Length: 68
Image 1: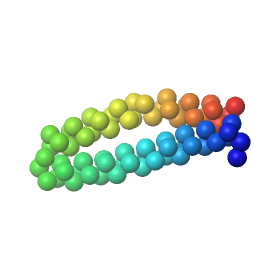
Image 2 (image 1 turned 90 degrees about the horizontal axis):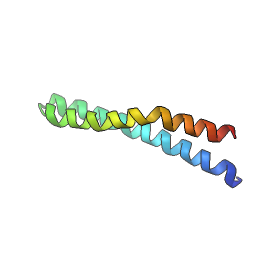
Image 3 (image 1 turned 45 degrees about the vertical axis):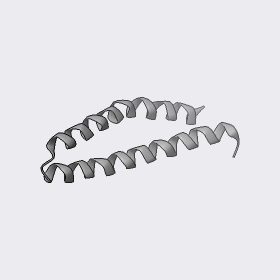
Image 4 (image 1 turned 135 degrees about the horizontal axis):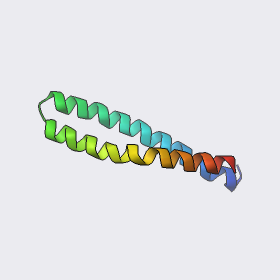
């Protein structure tokens, strides 16, 4: 695979991993919340919000690289 194709492909897979990890962490936050640790769950969701804010920009950037 040429280097020009490798970088977007790697970034795409890293982005997919980030989305999967965020989903898993959200599930853990739900469990923590049910155990009565609402503050911890809220802190986790706050960190996940940062991922969500950056997701659209990252996805657009990867799409641009893949289209070049």
